Image (cartoon, rainbow, N blue to C red; front, side):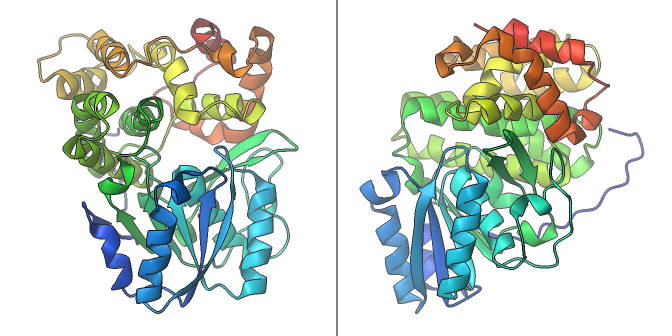
Length: 390
């Protein structure tokens, strides 16, 4: 971060946080009278009664709803376009993203395409996207049932162009949620391995945002508290999913990390992971980040030493004298969450794929490379992949 920073802060999202806050959906002034509820193609939203609960609360609030339930873990452009067409045909005037980051990200993209002509990739910047401006989007209500992406507190929507194998983050002032309800009671059903993957996604939002060259005093506050909370409580949530205190702390850390993304930025670690899951969409985003994280952060160890030591201190609650303390604390945290030995090959990735992934990362999410502590070479990026591959 610059010694004399210049920054601005504008996050136009009303946040309701806490156990039981989902009930406020029945009494809050909502941004429309007919919602499209966007959920994943999985079973959890129906199995655990979350969808029925949301629909019932909307009925109490005199709001009608339809459901779009095809979203994939790595959401694709085709579903965004299909849902947007349905949204227009059915006269929906706002979108509810219910579930994990994929559902909420999709809700944002659908909200854009419900109000803008042509193809979603016309508006995406990077890869084959045309980067055209948008003038409006439908309002979005975010109701996360996972703790990881922080998409409830930032404008970003990560969508994959499945035909071109481009996975790119898109967002602007129009894609901030109008309202976000973060209720940790909706998160107790997440299995341990997904709790870990999602929680580390939040951790890396915070850690990357802390070392990014665009970090600000306000993003530093959010980032260090998110890092502290996740180091302390994510292992508890992974090992005891019913521990509501731990779930709440992790959920708040995830929202804080989303605020980091609104006031600083991710760095090229996210570009490198997006390239991996663009080619292999079965790879969970958090698992990909975990897999490359130690090699990634080791690469910048001597470029922002004081910041590494500060992260180590909030993680360990001990004085740090060397930047490697952060690497050690990160490795220990991964072991406590049982994700210290992930094999990228389990998701089909091959060693010969790695060079083209470097190229993909540059072409689709190259902007994040400009926010690294120092310029990362293609050779270094390939080395990060190679050191992480097993």
